[in-house]
Image (tube, rainbow, N blue to C red; front, top):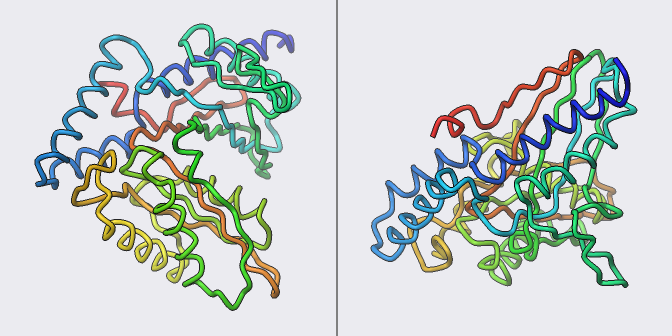
Length: 300
């Protein structure tokens, strides 16, 4: 297959999926919002949920993004070592973002530092952002995609603690971020927590935590316990939907971790809004695409 055809085929498939992602929530986010709406009793919070679900319906009816801020696109690529078109992926993903920006349309959000100039097509150094992971003995490509909006990115942080701060210190970092700017992220929130050895590794792990399905638990029992502790703590603050108070303030809390140095304990925190727009797309070696994250909401 000609390389130019490969690139265009992948780009078209990804651009179509970005269009879907901007206008429909992933299944797990939609289901959790339904559950929270059903459980809410405070009248003002119930009204907010009614507005959210009207917004969801109108986005489909009018064929418009759920939120005007369609973010900067971040790709987390799990590339099979035997996938035959690895050299085409970066170019195809950039082309997909350019197509979706014009066609969907996605709001142009890529601003060049120092020049402070919007490029107008969401293409710039670091946009789209691409993280790579090579999967041995696989010939397929899995794209985990996140639309990083301004509001949900604003409270994010990464700090390096003394190890004596312990996991209580991890909780303190998360709660401080929530109390400082959490309302800017349009709650109820998805909170990703990364634990590592330095600020950059903890930050990436926190973003990967956001990509996990709502309701999943970290397989390490103590990490799963920390997820519950943080979720209960944030809910106890009573922020509620759109920060107007309510029974719950969190869709979920996910923790991911890597080894840390004996002298450091790094913590990263990333946030998703109530309309957390992330998705999973799988592409096989024949370039057939399968959407894994939106099977239910595609039928709404």
